[in-house]
Length: 332
Image (cartoon, rainbow, N blue to C red):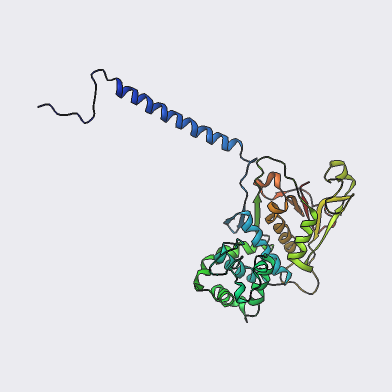
């Protein structure tokens, strides 16, 4: 008795050949689509960057989205306004990484919300206040500084004394990332924060120097002095001013000059170079939301249009209103 074949066949072999050709055609089409996608992605690279931020220091890298970076820089700025040490920033960042992943959440367990998942019912403020990152950060630091010797305590102990969490050991896993991020946001010269912008090749527009000055004043308080630089003859010729100035009428440029001079009375953050880097990193962290076009400090510059390359050497000292100024230029 002849064996039954595993698949049906016909004497002419027509059906299997047609199926084979269809399969090969489909596979070829899929390969071509894949190649086209690869080419398109690499052709547009540099003009359609993903909006994200990267912190590098001592051979380590931490990636954040732009919202996380902006919130982290706000926490660090509030610590500066209070002359708190870098360790306080690390504790706060580790806490927020655990509680909200550095996102300003409008929800949480029971009535918890915000960067630190603080609860209105527990005296942290109203819901609206807690959703303000500056208020939330100040509330956290208000509690932290009341802990005797907090800077010498294990991070989990210090954070738990503030938060009174049901999972106190969870803060420990974020300590390394928080320390790396704090080193950049407090101006350590060995650390760098870079953010790329996602403009898709479109021209960046809609910046307002008044918003930059207001935000700087609100987050750093009296620790910084910011002013809108007056338009020089060279900037008039090159067209770097909008000619009207969205914040102050004719003659105002789109550049905000921020003094990096260390305030009198002692400061925990070191010299002018460290303070300048802190302010420059803050500006880059907020670049996406404040429509920052360019940030300069001394001989380094960050440009939104070339943000994929990060901080670049300018070859000459920054031509700011004063040698210690950080310059923040917003889009027109």
